[in-house]
Amino acid sequence: MKTTKQISSRDKTYLLMILPAIILFVAFNTIPLITGAVYSFTNYKGYGDFSFVGLRNYIDLFSDERVRNSYLFTFKYAIIGTILINLLSILLAMGLNSKIKGKTVLRGIYFIPNILGGLIIGYIFGFFFTYILPAVGKAVHIGFLENSILADEKYAWLGVLIVGVWQAVAMNTIIYISGLQTIPSDIYEAGMVDGVTPWKKFTKLTFPMLLPFISINLVLSTKNMLMVFDQIVSLTKGGPAQSTESISYLIYRNGMDGGQFGFQSANAVLFFIVIVAFAIIQIKITGKKEEQL
Amino acid sequence: MIKAKKVNNTNILLTIILILGCVTVLFPLYMAIMIAFKNPSEMTNDVAGALGFPSHWSFANFKEAMRITDFWRTLGNSIFITSTTIVFSLIVHSMAGYAIGRSMARKKSFKFAYFYIVSGMFVPFAILMMPLVKETAQLGIDNRLGVILLYVVFYMPMNVMLYSGYLKNVPLAMEEAADIDGASAWRTYWTIIFPMMKPMHATVAVLTALGTWNDVMTPLVIMSGTKNTTLPLAQLNFQSQFGTNYNLAFASYLLALIPILIFYVICQKQIIGGIANGAVKG
Image (cartoon, rainbow over all chains, first blue to last red):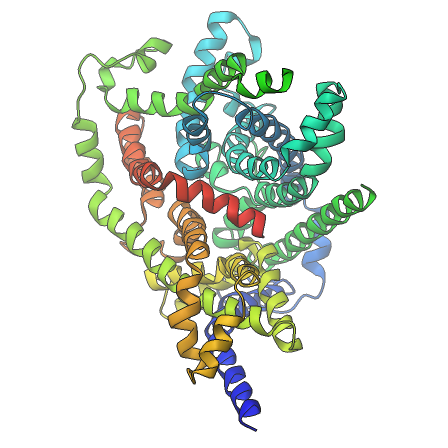
């Protein structure tokens, strides 16, 4: 009798403890999410009257060139960025995890980009791309570097990519280092006795052991790269000629000031679906790989 | 014999390569420092003008930048928003994580609550942004309080996941012993469990702090009309006043970076440990 009473009072306490989180989450995540979804079926400008237009916005999304370009840019940026980030950070993690001098200091330095804000880093790199790099390009006569890459429709996305990768490598490296540390050293020692080549050692030993961490990092970095915003604001403002307009930036630009509240809400709903789809696909693929091994 | 030799030898070549690689990280900071201490007249058009040492180190740019961006007030805002967010997060998220962690296995409703909150991780800010601007304005919290509440919600999925995951390592025995002594679940939580989750509090605090301190988008859309701004947002707001005076602008950027760099130098171990911890547990 006493125990059941105690359990129920305990459950009441649990309920009380989760309540503040649930209230806040409903108020500032679920409600705006639903509101946004509702607005996506309207022609709301952000002010004044509006009416429901059915699937109109969604149909228009697929024929809108600016929207299509923003998706193409964001996908290109996220896919190439994610591959580069993970290649570089696996290499860097393996370097920082081997027998080297000054390990702690080196790790500390390589992690710095992660703690600095994307906006300010963007401004600093913006100066580098606009003034330093062209000067170097002129000095050594590399044609495409002689003008600022940020002012060139063809190359501006590379500038944004460099800054995004520069920042993200730090975080993923730390995760890979902690992954490498979970690999027991006697596995390597056994391999060494057998005279395995370094490449074989990587593909047969390190890579499979790292798979769970690769899976975490792929999902995290794809998600972050898809949501790119700060670097766009400080480096290119979406230009030149909208060649670096990311999805987040377009929604912000045209949804907040451009009188496209309803239309950009539809864009945001589509963006949400895309992010979830990317995550599910990646988890499925890496999950299958893990099962096979 | 061969094995022992391998273990003791440090890889000198690799060490050198990694030290050289640091240039990619440190060069932008070096450039920012050189430019910030210079007079505009020293900025000639060649690379040396920008990257060389200044003829004399002047703090004038920093003084001017502090005046333009109202530095101390802006810094105060950033510190206030970040620290209040951390306090709220530690309390609200740890309670929720605890309640979920201890009930999820028995109760479907808590399991649902867990997946409901964690799925928020994949909701992009872009979809919430426009409705939130309206909502916070209607509630009269289009100010620092609103920004803080939004951060508590944005970091909730990750933090609740971390806390409830960590609880799997905290044995039930402690609570059961306290139960027998007749302590209420509420009391047990604050006196025994909450202090025991210290390592996770550190991880949560670090991850939440880095995210909120550097965030631009939320204060940009929520507080744009008010006088209050955060350090990163001030750099955006005062772009037009910096104009083409890069020396002034870079002094201001450095001022905005210094607080987090100091924090990093002091708590480097906790920060790197926290990140690694968060990813592995998550």
